[in-house]
Image 1 (cartoon, rainbow, N blue to C red):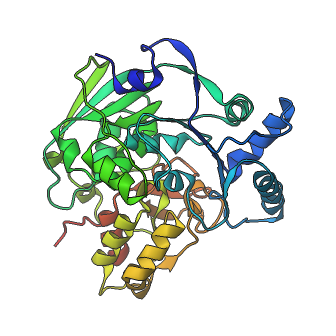
Image 2 (cartoon, rainbow, N blue to C red):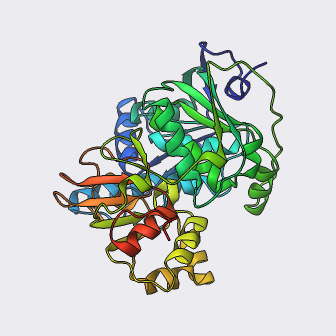
Length: 403
């Protein structure tokens, strides 16, 4: 039987194919480069295709005059073309696409490596560079080498304070940062049915940290209900047993709170083993853990306390921010002494809104902790929302299961 990737792409692993792209998006960083490449290819105007998006999120608001000028040019282009445009404050591109814009079975390409996030909907979603995105703008198509697939078999349910982020760090640690290079990870098994869409988005999001081309879930009742809540009708996808290049078995009941230590995502330790390590900053947000369920969980855990270290909380989209305001979640976070940022990527890529100083240490719910990523000389630990909440309260790495 064919894997889900093979079914969507319509060819066997290893074959080279050209396929129409259903959804294509770029952000303020890659969009500037894509526009330049598109013009260099002879691009003059775009048609009326509604599947193209430009979303400002990476350095939004602009951090200096140069950035502002580039964004001004891209904004003018987006508004004068067929692009669906999301300006500063709307949110992270991957989250915006996840709010009812992706359907099971679609081919989705984003000019950002974490476009794999959208495989949670049963779509083949992957990232490309600016030149490939420019070619998509010109032709509506792109080429693929159909990836081989790896099966991540999930069983059981989470126990204690373990979360999807801990599971994601666990599988990246087992595979290694190059253990799934140009493969499609397919998350299957009875354990999948216990996962919400937000949790699935976390698992797909980190698939690229193991080198994967895509990270997919089969669309099921959870997917269909989520999409219906966002105004979309969708059908589930039937799982068919198939042969995987490699397989990994994980019982959710065995997962404990984990932290990835500087400077590799696949170097992971139990939070207990690092308890007491001092922090200068805690950051909750990004396309990994900036959704409403994350903010609500963080608020519940810090409510009635004051954070002991500077703590940044940045919603992944404006819709999430509005809901957090409406439900009182934002008030609880502010009352705990946290700082709220403009919906978007925030300091994740190290340009603004919370960059680290030399020698400073941050516990982040993001997906990467590479050297100098959030500031030259800074160090980043990656953890779950629950670990971030406990650590913010104590000012040091703290297990969410600590008494």
